[in-house]
Structure formats: structure tokens, C-alpha cells
Length: 336
Image (cartoon, rainbow, N blue to C red):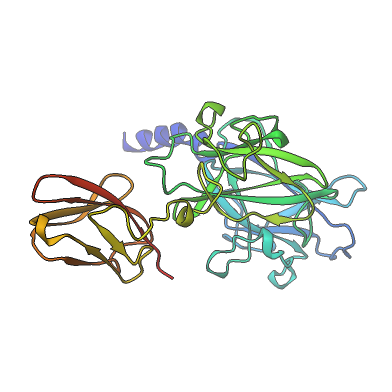
């Protein structure tokens, strides 16, 4: 009976384990092809069913397409995951391509290419035909977009997306992936010398678009970019032309009663109070509203807050005086 149950469980889970066909392709123009062929190596190989484990440079052969310089392979992969990989001109790991810096994962000195498989649809995902050792396909330029979502109280269950004129404003076509600290990224390949408009979405429909104003917005409140070369854009805060540090910068004097300095803070910040309005109580919350620290019955003029224990980001400090008047200050913690 147990064996039947296990077999049934595998049948039920099978479509979820291998939910997506993905086609990797590489253009080997200008390369002398190894007698051992062209391969792809990555952290997806075990999940795709190849022997020898992940990052095996010989197990996943790419096949030449006709008489072209393009080599490709179709694999079955679990969706809704990020994968890393490199192309190999041969079957030894020292024969892997040198991935340009702009195409690398880039965090913790990671020099792999990466892709996020965001769809559970049964049709095949055709990845761009990248040139071996280059950023983009022939005739295209790479643009790497980055948006910081730390000021958003929650991330939509459908994820963060990029919509623009390069995708006919399809809100679901460019899913973004976060490597660290709610900074979401995606890569597109666009025509050179062409102007594009775009916005970031907290979700996958246009009604979830950011509300953008400022110098980076055009007449329709879209962001714009003219593609000149392979480009990695600076990260910006959702609904802002600036990064989240500058978009949420809090002046030292926030009102007539309280001062908070330094702000941004690294090791500590000091809250200056009017002692005649004591006793004070305060509490610090993160962007989700979760209380991080608090203090009650405080009667001095200066309160030093240890920010070393807080991760970098935006916090809200609420101070209540003896007359039960409350003021909320924005605290920016930024560790080098």
C-alpha cells in the first residue's frame, strides 16, 4: 500500500517538477568550434535530468542548427526559479566563455550568466540567442533594469515586472528577480539608437504601475531610455527618479520639537528632545509595520539609538511626548 501511495504522489508531482521547456541557444560566430562540440554548463543540470550533476561541462551537448553558427538545446526545468549557466566551446570547464561583466550575476564576485524562468505555461520558452562571450544577440543591445522595492509595504503575489514599449506594454512579459534586499532586476535586448518608454509594476498588470513624477518622467509619466550600448541602469526606488536613500532622505530637522542625526545612520543616530515635554516614549518599525525596538518613560534631552543591530533600509521612528502628541520620523540606516 505504501508503494502505491508513493507512486501516486510522484505522478501528481511530476508535472510540477518539470513544468517548463526552455531552449538555450548560443551564436558561435567567430569561434573555432572544438572537436568535442559545444556544451552548456550550469546549476540547472541536475533538475533537468542530466547525469554528472550541476556545472558538468560535458553532459549537456548543444546541437548545431542546420549550417548556421547557432547551437541550441531544449531542457525541461522547474519554473519560477533563477538559474545560472555558461556556454562551453568544448567539454572541459576551462573552455567556458568569459562572461562580460554587465551580463554576470555580479553579486559576491559571481561571473555566471543568469535567467529567471517565470512561466508555468506548457509552451517552450525560447531564450535569446546570445553571442558566445558577449552581452547580447547579434544586432541587439543589452539593458539591465533595476528597481528597489523597499518602500513598498508588500510585493504583489504575481511578482515585480517591467512593462514598456519594447514589449508592447505587456505587463506580464518581463518578470523581475531579486538577488538582494528587495532590488529586482531583469534583462532585455533592444534595438540600438531607438528610444523606449517603460515603467515598473508591483504586479503583472498595468494598473499596478508605479506613479512617477519628476525629472525622469516624460509627459505621460513614463521613464525613458535611448539605447546606445550595452547598459546596466542604476537602481531606482519604485515611483521615484532617485535611489531609495535619496528618495527618502530625511533632513536633520524634521519639525520644531525633534531632531534626528546623523540620518542616514551607520552605527548610531541621536534623537534630540525638548526635555520640558517629557516623559517620552518611542518605538521603531520597519516598512512592514513590525516593531523593532521601543522605549518608555524617557526623560532626557538626547536618546542614542544603536543602529548597528538594524539591517540597511528605511524605518519609522514614532515619538510621543508627555502631552500624548505623536510625531513619526523617517530613519534611513545605511551600512557601508
